[in-house]
Length: 117
Image (cartoon, rainbow, N blue to C red; front, top):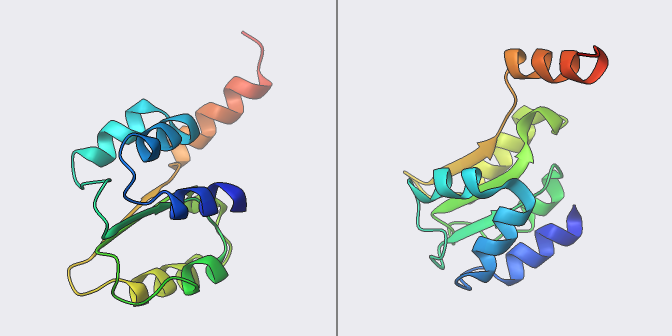
């Protein structure tokens, strides 16, 4: 996952390449959903995939108006500290977009995985 983070970070602002990586990692539905709310190709937008606070702390303060994390929030340990770190990197009115799995989605996934149809 760290490799994807570095790749996304280094390709920030690169049209089509960023799109292809996000689609490959999370799917076209996720890319289209994100694209409705932000300009993914903006130089003030960063897309990454991390559950590590260190990767967030490594970002410069107030450089990015939008941070997109493709890792499910459910998979992040110490989620409050993680969200605090993200918030410290965003300016006032900055945008943070992340993925998550609801309880209903998790139950369906587990049932589908373990119960034969």
